[in-house]
Length: 227
Ligand SMILES: [Zn+2]
Ligand SMILES: [Zn+2]
Image (cartoon, rainbow, N blue to C red):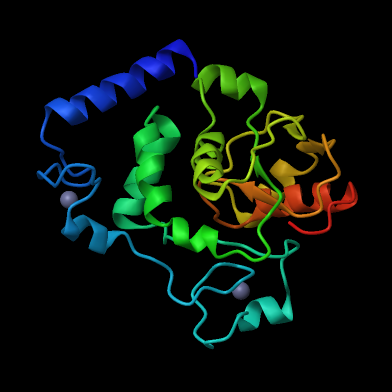
């Protein structure tokens, strides 16, 4: 933990002890050791009966949705417990643009059951890497912060060495699905520290899936079969 990060975590801890706890969503007071009030919890919308491949709500009531049966994505399994809307969206945007580790903690720990139910469990967590230039500018990688929380909760190690971003790509936001695919092409390199065969790639948000797809392609080509 860096000095600045330790300081932030320390102040957050102290302020939680000294002040009555406030809901992260609406700032109303809540019971200690909770992050959200009941009203805000209700607005963190979970995906009901998700498809195991695209993570979207599956109205067929089966493991895979019709779209994935017809044209499956490259990866073997996907878990994305929350819909990117309302409070979830606000919190994830804050997480992307501010050093707010407690936000990641509040979301991941609350929905940990979705990740704990993956069988067989992955051997290793690979956070989607930032290019070192971007990491220097931002000071932290939100995917790594999420992976760290998952790692502690699920007892699966994090590997930040094997998967690297070798190209500093333009931001994906605002690009069409086709341009996202083009933008991210060849952006990653995978040289595993150990020959992992079941890995979980960790990111904060999945939209068109172009980043996840490009990483999966890179991992498959390097001999990792289950992503
Ligand atoms: Zn609230
Ligand atoms: Zn699907």
